[in-house]
Length: 76
Image 1 (tube, rainbow, N blue to C red):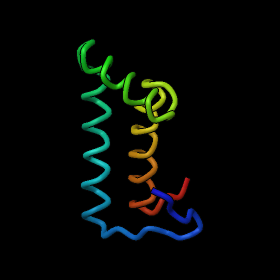
Image 2: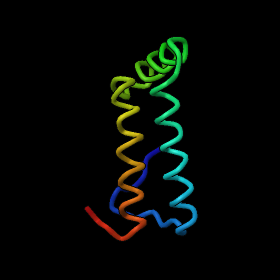
Image 3: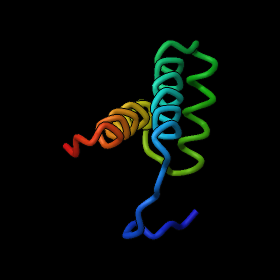
């Protein structure tokens, strides 16, 4: 997917809150996942050149936190 990073994406407040919650749930689940799930993530991440699995998990958390801050009007 090639998105123009100069164009904002608008979410309704309830959509932003739901996305924040979903990202947090996914991050938490991945951090507590079994070895088989982590092995699958390693294969997926390496095949798609997206960095390390831990980096992907950390990015989920960072995006979730940033989304929450922006939704609450606290831009950094």
